[in-house]
Image (cartoon, rainbow, N blue to C red; front, side, top):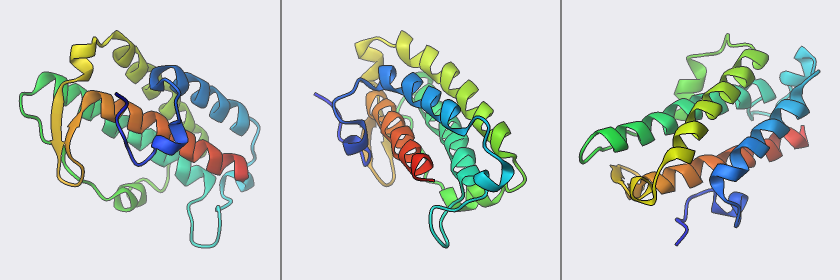
Length: 157
């Protein structure tokens, strides 16, 4: 049974491991050739810019990849909450292309791990203070849907 995440509607019935490289390739193709001004456009007043979205995507590759690795390596692993806005604010000087390229590289690394996991590995549990009991599979689905969600934002820009 497919796990339900906040981004399940974005992922739909796609396989998350198959969807991620397609999404990442679309992000790369979409943003290749953008000017600095294009990367600094916000979705709406007070919303993140394209550059900030790319930084956020790279940060989420770090966070979700770390959580999967820790769940697989640590009995009774409990993930920690973090404030995504504070994390983003700590890295304001990262260039858009650097963030995009980091996200793409980190995703390739995460995908290599995700694709190697057995059904038992994907069923490994962990806890999260906001979401409760989760599995590695839930994280993989969450990451894939999250990428699609932000790809759609970049497409609107």
